[in-house]
Length: 495
Image 1 (spheres, rainbow, N blue to C red):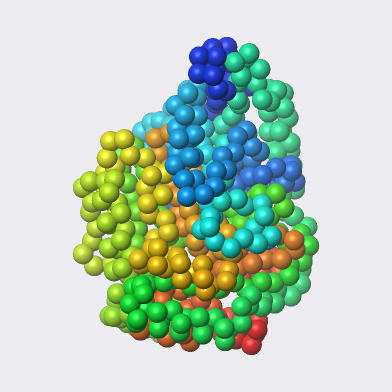
Image 2: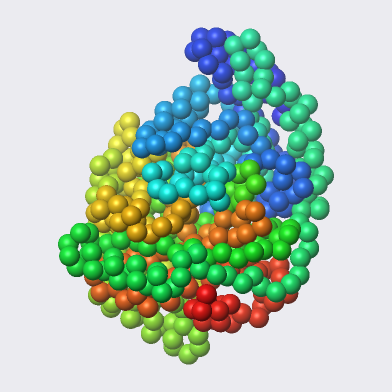
């Protein structure tokens, strides 16, 4: 029986449930398909006609692609997380799911059952601050947007699975005809071999600061002064740099570069309207699988060394740095206190680890816990965001300083991005990222400011954090291999 045949078989029961509940009912079906490259599918010509999202997990080694929109939840304001929580639970609790074919998946000869990314999955993200400044560049990215895709593809080492999602009304009508689902999947598969966008070669983009380096360093000093005056313990200040891009930048190549060079990061791309927000973030906000919660504190950083024992020296200095250890402890302390509101049995190491990425080392503390009965993943997200790693501490004082002084529309930068199912989900913090719209890229990086922060050092740190996306966007250009170190980046200090 085909995917659409199995959907059709569930429509009468869905219509009956819709009449009983007074609202449309979701029907989903899953089938195993021939292996498909997730990046090729997400960037194919047929996919470009739809809103869509690409997501990879660094440890579980799967990729998730959602294409088209069966339903989108876009509440705004302070209650946006609660509104999506209520709406998504109602949607998924009522849903009828045919996923019998998923159980044939094996890992080391053991059946795995339903996996992340199979069955109905809401994917998307949130704005950093729904009450912060708004600009036209983020027009297609609302305060919140979790979308149920029309089609989802989940790929991993042992196979690929396709999920189709349809809404059924009380009279038995569906929001899309079965033949339209088949046509979309056929178009996606047939256009996959022509996935790369226009082949562009040229010079690496030239970036300019949205706010001058002199002004940004002065802002850092203003924050240090406020901290020393007792206004707050920490605040995170972000920078934005912009560059015009050639028409038809090869985003498939950009995503492949991010996956290859940053294998321990969550790599994502979210297309909404005329824009795409993409990046490779090392920071998990929170993950839920059944009752197990995973989260992490990530704060305090130093650049990678080049040659000899430089890396060893830098990591040793990072572990001994009073400033970085204090900054990290602020984040770790708040994380555990917040998780404790909804979780039990919290466990974390006494000392932070060193998390080594392609161009930077971070202080990193993983935390595991058990969620309390009745608590939900989005309740955790609402309490955790923004963490002191991207906002500050105390939260309200830091956010007030950011709103009054940063002068930047962060959009979805440094905010939760990820996916949600009925019994599990995963959200990362959207760092090391870029917004591409209107032929221009905006790249973002933030620095944690505490007592003892030096404006010049923070500026250099922000340059290091901007480098991954600069290199990724240059990956399809001939000059991409010509950059050698952070100080060589396109006149950044003079911009």
